[in-house]
Image (cartoon, rainbow, N blue to C red; front, side, top):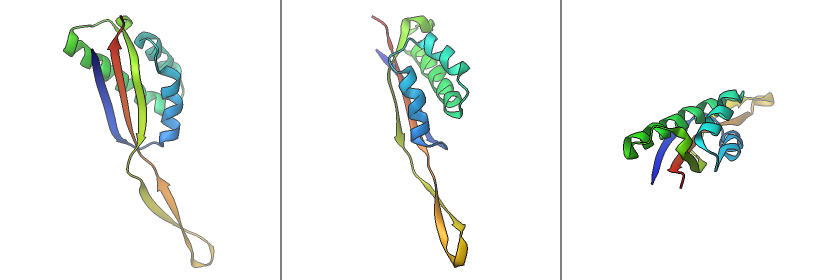
Length: 112
């Protein structure tokens, strides 16, 4: 029994989000929430909200209100569309600036 929450087109690079997701994967939800609350990164704030949403979805699906009974079974970040901007450089040239986005997904399951 699983419940999923996702955030699409988050304006943060996938590399930065994967650092946070690797730290909380296969952890109990209550431990992961406390880790994310104390982590000083933009990605941690995003993942905290997604994880809280997944816990709320689990509460609706199987009536489990306690995060201590849940664990993070899947947590991954895929690359979203890239915003391409240009910056003027010397001698009339222009270089491309890639503003990357991510699709973040977190799935929680009941602990057996």
